[in-house]
Length: 38
Image (tube, rainbow, N blue to C red; front, top):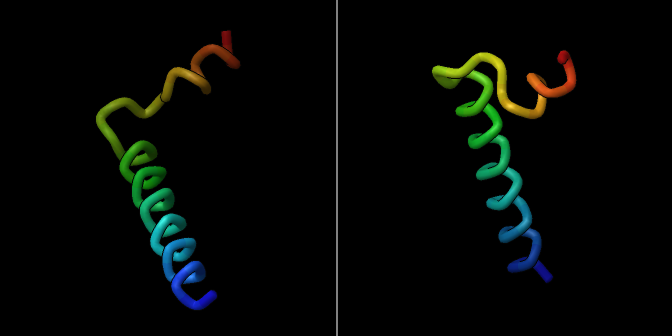
């Protein structure tokens, strides 16, 4: 059970890190936002 929680926590950290990379990346408007605005 404890191992599962550690895996979930690591996965969440990876996802958050990827979101931060995308948000602060060279492209300020990701494709999914872009299609919404047009």
